[in-house]
Figure 1: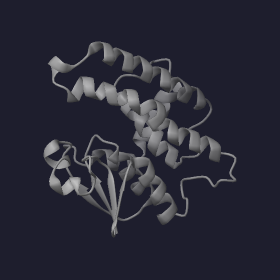
Figure 2: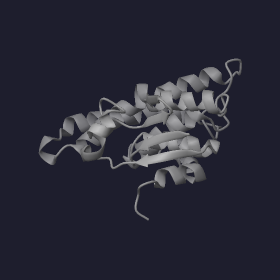
Figure 3: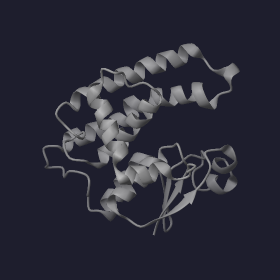
Figure 4: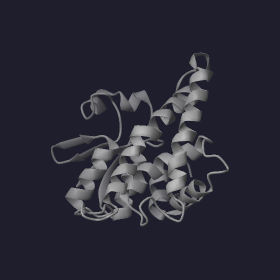
Length: 206
């Protein structure tokens, strides 16, 4: 049985979303996004830096949301929600899958640090403004790529659980401009998917 170590408002939502899209059974260890849970001795035994998500299966403990998603697709769904290497859309899938952590999430991380995680007296408005500008710029190619498409490679794929989640976060951080109509519509489509609604609601009130 797959076991997902999860906290709300984190990359762990990507993994729960994929599991729900695939209809796979899994066990959830729900934790708070707080040092008392994430930095506990118990969780550091799973991840030495006290991060999430962590996927557990038997003796396996796997970190990093992208690696976890790849593992689930290959070991449990024979590549489902991922085009085969001979598929014409495979290179595009690879590009957007990795664009997530390469370009979009670094400025997201900085914004979250300087708006939520640091106490007000330690926040740097210059670093925040620079990250906001960089994030908006990094979303422009995504908006352009979505012209005439509902999802990143046409049909819904696991790339949408990766980059799509980052786009949803970007929208919540007010970094999607009014001119990015393709991206706004894309985020709306993703947020309406039942599997995302379920994953995003884990651990939240109501």
